[in-house]
Image (cartoon, rainbow, N blue to C red):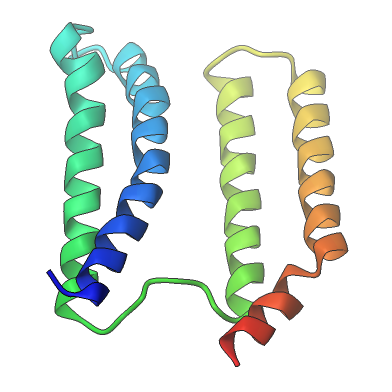
Length: 136
């Protein structure tokens, strides 16, 4: 294995921590909401592991086969990622209110506080400027 391949595998294994975390949280929610999917040890633990393995393998394969680094390196890309995260948070908040039965006031307050906090953090840290400097 050459140096580039080792770096790709190391980076994707570090990213895969997020995949397994999202799978361990997301799949049980899906399983509890879908009537045709039984909550067994295989579905609750097997689906997150399968999701983790597939995503990690596919991303390693894509990065190995192409010259793409699959990284956000521009200020526009960072702000698009931030906007996408805010939009997905909004979808999650709507889901908690409509399907989860959580109080609208508390979910809305948590969403607004979290969104304002993240935007202020991005602005304070000047992440887009530093990302642009790294790309040069």
